[in-house]
Length: 443
Ligand code: G3I
Image (tube, rainbow, N blue to C red):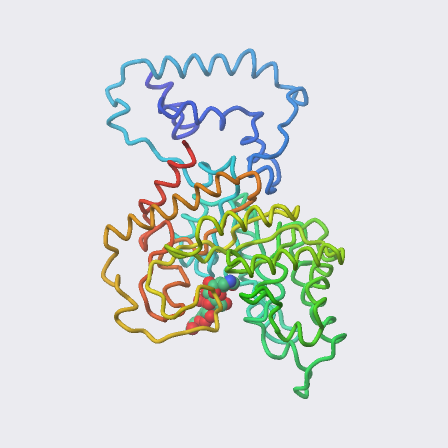
């Protein structure tokens, strides 16, 4: 019996653990959607468990599995489970499932990767990302200023490495971001004499950038944040240089160019504070207008830069249901929960905002009090409770970073603070919120 158990354990480290049998059998059954995800090229639907199952009679080995291997396996496993074992289940801690496994049938669970994780300089962060998440977004390495810093100069090294890494690990890949007012060099909008470009010249520059970047990863990057943060909090279009030079149709053109460069890629509009009613309405009008113009938009991402009290669950729910009503995929794209006092009366994520470090703005520099840790756990639970309730509408939930130490929230809007907004602490250990979210998914 021990040698059989050893054999099973070698096949899969968790197989011999009786308490996990019911969960694990799906991983072993070769015709399940989980197995499909392992053996077929990655796509959002198969990863989320939404792909049609392989028809059983398509597989020549079906009867062999049904009549020989599966009954034998079940019998052996049953005997193994009921046999007395000196190492009883109590003495062996049950290995927990991972986030991506726990939410596999609900939606993709993603993270943003920074350049240190991509290169492997942060090897443990990279390993943690691979273990826990099944989708990745480039936190910075695909932004215009990084990937296309000067006219005619492209810097693909880090982006290539991210795509390779994600592909090797069967992850859904999100490119971030093609058209944004921020992190876009000044030269993009000006000619060699420093004069503003004409509408036609800027459209040509936008198209060249999108063709080059999206075209390079055609068929490999599964979805793109095509336009980022084009709206103000009141729902009006932000008057960026894109808007001023090209006009309102710059968004539709960006989606068209991206679709031409990779007709198979999902194409998203992505923004923050979309739970504010006015901004939500602005986003809905924007998507409707894009649809009327025939722009190939397929999804709408609400970033999810949240805090303990923003947004209200009512407003979050109204955003999810309102967006789903547009007939596009809905996703949460940059989730974290800020635990620090606000530096000013502002809820958004405008990277241009900043404030000076003061002691009272950095109350947890020496550690997070248990009661605040508990508040974080409760907040994640209520938010994911809502996500699970609307799992039929949500295709992906992506955290903006892997560990607390990686979060941009340590440096924005006040540089040098110690924040705790994610599910893993600075050492990469899962926090109570992590365990609570696993438990919630398994209920
Ligand atoms: O890589 C350089 C490094 O070489 C240099 O020594 C260092 C000195 O400041 O800067 C490093 O670049 C920083 C980069 O993050 C990598 O850490 C940039 O200054 C800093 O501006 C940049 O911040 C990023 C910010 O977007 C602006 O691009 C954050 O990491 C990133 O999390 C944040 O992400 C945005 C989303 O793209 C859009 N939605 C809002 C979200 C939060 O602002």
